[in-house]
Length: 199
Image (cartoon, rainbow, N blue to C red; front, side, top):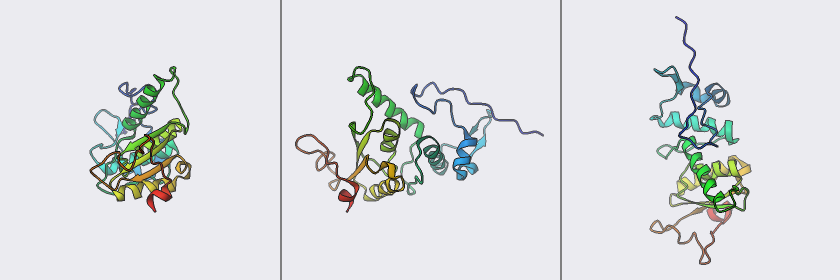
């Protein structure tokens, strides 16, 4: 019996209008860019290609492929048992943050490294800085109490040199605090370079 060709996914109108993932996933291209994804892709009962989003390994493979395909990020990986956030939902936050900034900037979304974002609890995935820099060229300071997570972010950045000048990392050595040691008395970030903050 001839295998049915998967249907085209309809537009996901719940995502931000600028979210490039509104039209779903082009698995043929994603697999071509990241062959490890292939083993996780199947055709569901609605005749749509998809993955099992409850499987962290499948989500990680999809993320790695999306980052290569749509954001020019190579060799992205996270250790086991660390949060693996879906890319479309996370880039939605970035787009809505851009809209918020535009609302106080005559409707114009500010772009470039002059927009400095503090990501509290960057995790091991470095996802908000990656997306914010890739889409709007913003610069980020990522803070985290977990040294293993920080070291993994450092590895991601080193594997993608284009991020080096835009993402700084700061280990929060006192887990009971959020801003202490991160925000200076004048209200600015302690935006050390990766080398000085992690040496």
